[in-house]
Length: 249
Length: 62
Image (cartoon, rainbow over the protein chains, first blue to last red):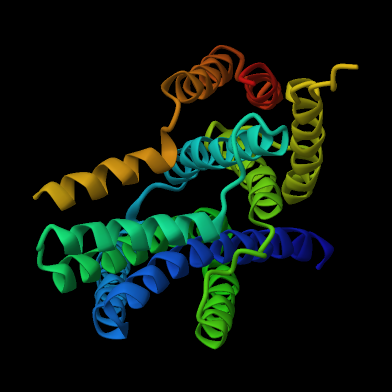
């Protein structure tokens, strides 16, 4: 039972936290569209994105069972390493102030400005606005689906991981609908840092499983990998942090 | 069509942002696979290469 929970909890929390980040980003774009052109193109675009996502999942979902286990573990592991370590590296550089933090308020302002700019050029704005909402929902949704499959499929945890992801999306949608503005106060970089650590740990675990590595402690090894990635990431932030500019006397 | 190409480009970007960083991760995985193939009696060796390699890439890539 202990082993089961040590695997279920990281899988569900990784799915929940990464979905939270993706949902916040999708919400920002949908809100930008709704602000400039109203809820009709924003809602239609978002719904079309969700429908496309559902079609992709329904079409490709059954194929997962047909892939040989080791090949599946290896493929998912490598993709998780690329995805998770990319997130973690970016979070490290943001925490060290090498690159600016992602700001939902700025993203919202840029999105609305771009849509208004297109309006001045006489483009068919409803169509473009709907397309922007569609693209945001599809791309951010695909990331959510990938994370759910990656952390859930290998151990039959697709349902709990999906519940975690759906809970995050529902939470963001409910809060976003209530406040009607970008959720700029969500500590996105902290979330990305945490998720990057977890996904990188899952990536090492699955890649190793795919290569036939018998990890000591089996599933518990993931927690050890996460601790090591966290330590390395914190060390990297300290190493890379730019020295503060001292005021001249 | 342009939108479709953009979507595929962004999809690839989910996994490969910095080419060198992605290449370094790929090299670590290939090295671990080689170790797993040449030392099947010590399968944990591939795991060590994989884990240490990934941590090294993370620290070095800053």
